[in-house]
Image (tube, one colour):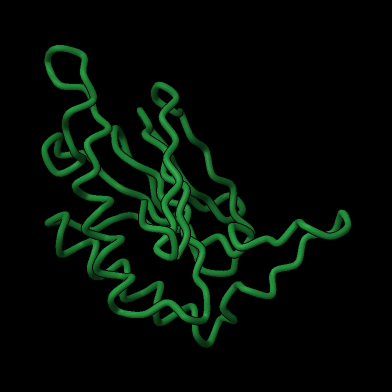
Length: 150
């Protein structure tokens, strides 16, 4: 699983004119799923995200997690995070899981994130063309890949 996480002041995700989710302060998590992703990846990543200390404490130091701040999360599926760009100028998405594999992993990830967060995360619509509006805070942008746990 590969994610791009952005700390936001507010964000929303829409399909056409219909707002699917909107949040105030929190995180937007773009999530790409590979065919080899499993329950261990789901647990590790969901736990990492809710405990990631990237919010300012009262001294202005990034020392608080979304759990500690009471912030919200939106998860947006994004297969393009697995783009291979080594050859040519047209990315290959061969490593991105097909929908029949990715959707159950996506749903399990959201369920685990909800359990850890103690409330429902917002979501986009899997496979849809969406408009994601982000008011990045900082900006703070973090990339995490479960295949490269640094």
